[in-house]
Amino acid sequence: MNSNERNLYRDLQEIRKLWNEWDPIGVCPSENDILDEYDFYLKPTLQLLRQTATTVEIENYLNLVLEEFMGFDDAYISHCKPHEFANKLHAWFQKLQKNINN
Image (cartoon, rainbow, N blue to C red; front, side, top):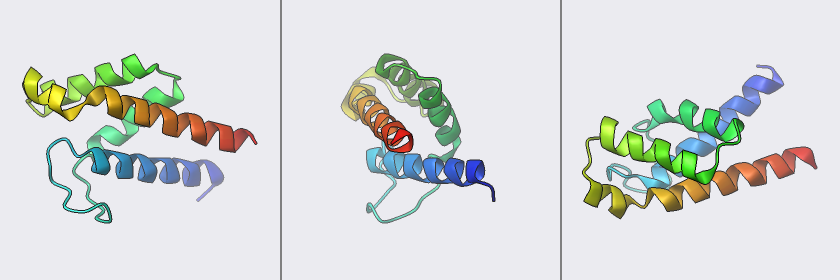
């Protein structure tokens, strides 16, 4: 595995952890469990972050996932707080980029 593949694997694992912590459908019983429930969304999430998407753009993607793919209504989407998760993803990526550049 070359360094790009290692970095991709590391980043996807971290995004998986973040998605599992957010857990909008409530399937992750504990933070130490490694579940693949949200794996379909990991690469698109990372792609947005790498394209320097704003938190609003990330939130729009999360809203799309929650509504179109998961079938949630507006009230439940609001309950999931996608804005907070978008901020968390953005902050994580900014920190990662800062660590890489130092």
